[in-house]
Length: 189
Image (cartoon, rainbow, N blue to C red):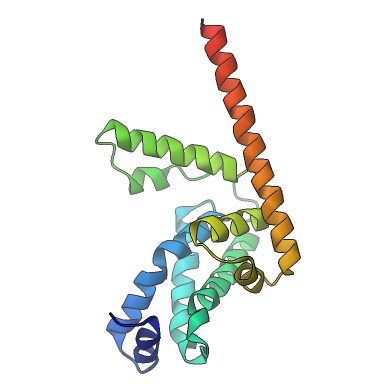
């Protein structure tokens, strides 16, 4: 199995297939992170596409191959912030067409997945942007606090405190939701 470093080196030398491999390697994470801040699928696609273009033109600047993904995420966050600032007045509701375009409504398990995703989005929307990013990077991408502090250019202690505060907010949200569900069950009886 080839190393990520070999793909980066080949991409630097103009190998298009290696560059495509790198983009495929990053793509899911880029979309997940963009989705934490941007509400429109068009804006998400634009942020990811702009990131890919910047990666392509600046790949030769990468010196430490171990931080390639961190470097790419920093580029993405800058792109997200640019788009977000230009679209501040846009409605904050998520574009439901994202779900319509992403999932097929073939069976009940797919519908349940959509409902869970929408619920997760509601929960994540209770967090501030920087809290969302930290939670996503920590839980879904398995970054260390040190890596997250480098990506976001924050003090490691700030990252830790925001993470633990966010976790408490999420816990409280789920506890309140479960309490509401139980109250509704009692009322139905």
